[in-house]
Image (cartoon, rainbow, N blue to C red; front, top):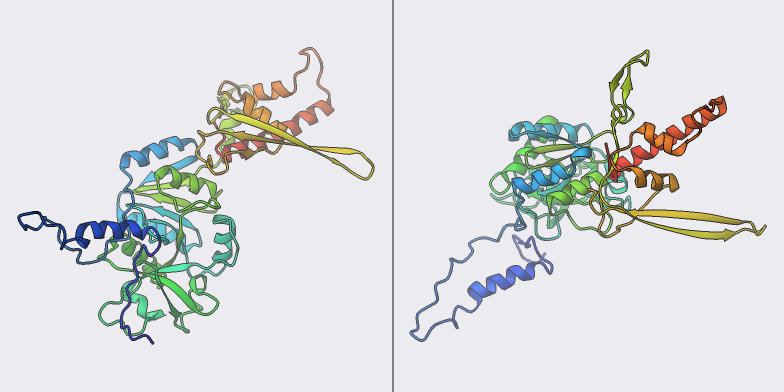
Length: 407
């Protein structure tokens, strides 16, 4: 309508692009005025022949990734998969099965979109994933739409791209919105908006070889040349993850809704609490200890804060509600924006206070059920002890899942 055959939109069209503009202006903008007295031009780099890439952020080193993994080792399982083809096959298989995964590799994106380096990926064929990712991964309104990352050479078969000529890579930075072909909308419902439109990212082998290879692995399995792509951030109000520690924190904060995190060559999964290690194991006759019980330990120094509120009902009977919070900055899931973690009750607070790495479950139970050694235990007391044991184990599991303790 405006007479443009092709349109280019920068990957950093917001305020973040000002830095790139200032750099360009400093290099080239004053070329006519920056001459010395001898009228010799100041040496300058060659003019950019194409736009700067979208991946201008820090490139995490192997050392920083290993350090982040080591810091979270009690709560994660790690497989090293150096072979790209095998790693991408693992990713594609999980996405095909309906799982949601996170991918962290290379330099981070600049601009408003996640373009495959700091992304959460899923299957575009499954409409239920829209609500699931919004509610259980991103913790936001269920109606928020998602975008596809599609192989550029296949894009015209699925989207109305107009006259693309010899270059179908019309939207490498997820900047263009077009319509999904009507015949294809039912096949990719999770990336098709209610009006049939979609804001797509086209991916080429030349510009993004790893992402292209990963999508190709999914294409080979399903016949669909794209994946659902959304930014890798799971904590409300926080931007896309930047460092390896932030990536692991965001992954753990998804509380299992993200199946695994691929960070470089590492495939990272969340550990299931090992109750046998916590409680220990004995032979069937109880005469032999097969595994000593573990000694749970706090994830670092803890600061507690307690408050209470009083609510008087119509009968003037006062109801007192106590709220206990803990701040533990060393735990992998520590949230700097919301430092205080609310405990369920005083029992969790007492447990955190005594878990210094020297007490077993037997010691913990003795702490809460102390009684004279010569006193015979009644059935009622035994039943109460069993209920207490179950409550303690449930709370220890919860504290473990939120990385407040480990064993």
